[in-house]
Image 1 (cartoon, rainbow, N blue to C red):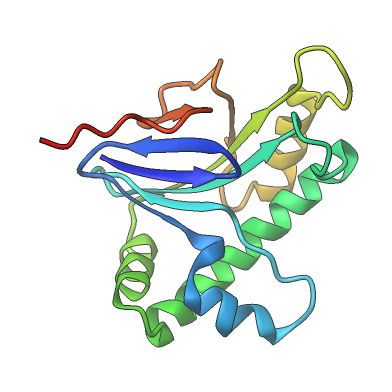
Image 2 (image 1 turned 60 degrees about the vertical axis):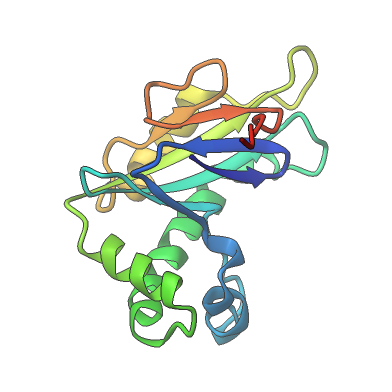
Length: 173
């Protein structure tokens, strides 16, 4: 099982799934992001055994540094656009062979799904209106994914992976 830590949230993927922290790729950090200002990337790039690619953006509003809720739809859409723009040249020019292969496989996927994993504070602001966020994302991303998913630890919507606020226990035999 592969587990990725994104800002203290642990995403655990089944054995046959492939996942990578896209915004930490060498190709993205050392080459693509230098092309122009305002280039950003989604947090996790995932490929399921059914050949569905997931672009996963993680937002944790339990921490005060999160993007203002009013800016969130545009920020997520920009990250999706930039990530998709980076995948083709990464497929051709990435130095890391795993990055190059995952780029190829994602570009050959059968289905593309945008997923926003968002955690919110229990009592205090800011609270993100999830229905409003979903409607705005549908409009901004309709040519990419007309049905983006908004998920959280309490509403995982059977995405195929698990998320927790604690690192999974690894048993070594």
